[in-house]
Image (tube, rainbow, N blue to C red; front, side, top):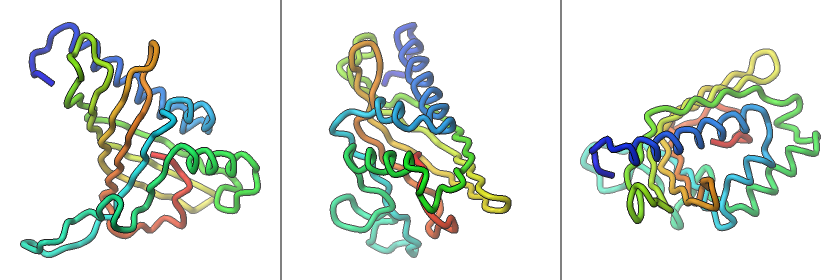
Length: 180
């Protein structure tokens, strides 16, 4: 996306920020069914595992999509199944429910297609911090980066692809029942 802060570019960035803020509220308020409505039917939700590699090694720091293990490698069907399982109230890892706060920052529109004013698809990078507390003493802080593709559907935006890069290579959380 051009660095020229035209009115169209500023308005697009504002729209995208609002999308992320609404998404964070939906997740923190456990309105997961509404969150699913923000996803395209063919969404790809992927979180590679970070590996500790020595400088100069040929291996990639992140596991490869379609080849290696991942924290998440899901589509809308499995995301919906996770949401439905949480809604039963008998999900062992979420009874009682976690309290979460999703903080999203450094939101940058990297590319808008076909052009800023009439964009129907955007590539976005952001940073996140997710705080989760459960029971009296279970606290997790997960930090990382997201690379997203959003597509314009009717008057709003939907998430078509999300790659979540957690900064931790070893997760100390007891489970990953949350969404990023």
